Image (cartoon, rainbow, N blue to C red):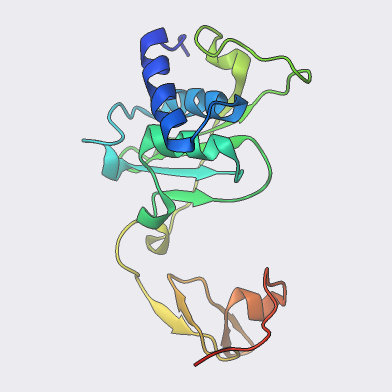
Length: 188
C-alpha cells in the first residue's frame, strides 16, 4: 500500500478525536487502520455512495474501534459493524459489492515506541491478509430475517442466533450458561 496522504489522515484523525473525546495511540492507529482497510477493498466514500457496500468486524472494544467507526461510518446499531472482542488490535473490512475482504492487525512494537502515522508505510504498521468472511442473510443490515423464542427463558432471539439442541430452541446464554449477568429478579 502507498503511504496515506498527510492531509487526509490529519482530517480523519481530527474527526476521530472529536468523536472519541481525546487523542491516544488507539485513535491514531485505528484511523490509519480504517484508511488502509478501505483502500484495500476499494471503498472510497464509506459515509456516502459506498455506505451500503461496507461491513467491518473489529476485534477489540477499545479506542481503535471508535476511530474505525468515525472513519467508516459503520455502527453496530446499523448492523454494519460487528464487535468481536478478542482483545486484538485487528479489524476486517468487507466490500459487500465485490466480496473482497481484508483483515488488518497492528504489528507489535516495543513498549512506548510510536510510529509517525502520517508517513509510516501501511506494511510497517499492519499485517494485512485477504480473507473470506461467510456472511448469512441474518448478518446483513436491514430488518430481522427471522425471530425465535428461547424455550428456557422465553426471551426473543433475532437473526438466527438461536440454537436447536435435542429439539429445543435455546438462546446462547441458556445453552452455555455463560452469561455476562446473573439474574436476581425480573420485573414484569
